[in-house]
Image: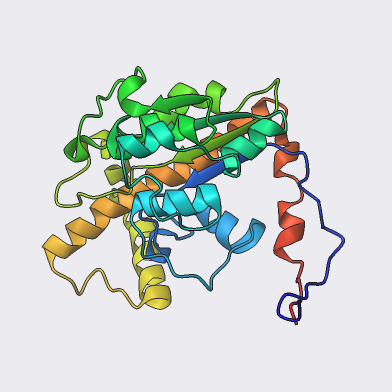
Length: 272
């Protein structure tokens, strides 16, 4: 109609028939992304990817996950719990539609299997296999919000299930390392705190935050600084997870699913 008049470009259908890895990032804010500590995310957001900036996201995790899977906000998705999981059918959800087209649709979450009844909801909307941190053998035990684990550790444990070299796949991954609480240091991410010991890099990071976010780490209390850095190490872990994901895709010889994204980043689609 007159309100939705789009102009096609040469890139229409560029990613047709490709595999899809959907990463729903927990609590990711612009202030978490910088070129010093999170270069992979920075590159995807500002150089090689397509970034949509005119959006508003104030939903809880389960509501956002519902929007992602359905393309709209269902009135009861993942909110009615066990009853919903037993009665819900969703042929129009992403996992179901990919499954109908011959893809293997699997779900991954680096937290507890029963939280928001995902272990019941996700099969009902088309996911064949489910992988959760508390059900995956790892060196670090995830049991509560006080023991949030590493997305990188979880990915390394399930990467062959998430990224399949010999079949078409749709993998949906809900991350966790940037989730609260931020009051205490994240034990599973200890190694990333050491990155702040490099004074040159830390100074560059502080300058970046001042110039781009009007946020001065030298002007806030020690308590607030610790809160922010506890959040920041989660973003660093996420960044290294995405980097490991790209590396694994390339190592398995299926890097074609990454091709074309750079072209899209510079291609303007006009809307009248």
